[in-house]
Length: 261
Ligand code: 8Y4
Image (cartoon, rainbow, N blue to C red; front, side, top):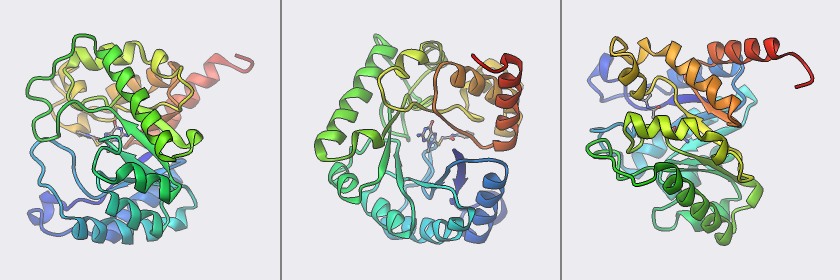
């Protein structure tokens, strides 16, 4: 899953404009690098990011989804809002990636009605404050119970069981120790019959391991190590920024392991 951001470029224009053509070009490039799925998001979930109104978010993502149909790969819409998911599916998205696991009013019903697949992700708290004081008694048990409960809620609402994917939400309301505990036991989360999605690419927890990796662009090595680990533990989908490098790492690992295992 290649991540396609459609948020304004705060560096070049102070955060006022975004460029659909640039986002489309980026997504097509990720598809050419071997992405099987493109994840289009119009609202940042980073701590401190400004919320985006429904109409604004639709205006960002719909032209990009339309442009990405040429890539010929499935498209997921990364949104918390059922109205945005509806517009995105009408434009061609087939999967709803929701970091709040369809918890907004009307989301479960909308997902069932749209007939799309869903990615249900765990998050403690809300993006603005989630990294202030994450706390768990048993991070693996709590994340697992939450994801299975949301999966059953989605299925009860009418989402197809075979369209439900789950994701531990690395970095979403978690300390380094929490993230590492989840990664260490990822095979358990992968064993529930729902494809496991994992997003570790360039995330801040990698900076907690390598203090020199202050910028997201400094975190490719850590991203690849964590992605390989995740794939080995049974992750079915890796959400990444660096598609070519991730494909190369996976292919190398597979070549060393050889056939028949
Ligand atoms: C640098 C680069 C700093 C990236 C932070 C980030 C996930 C997700 C995100 C995930 C699913 C991100 C939308 C966070 N992460 N969806 N979305 N799983 N399903 N941060 O792990 O990339 S955005």
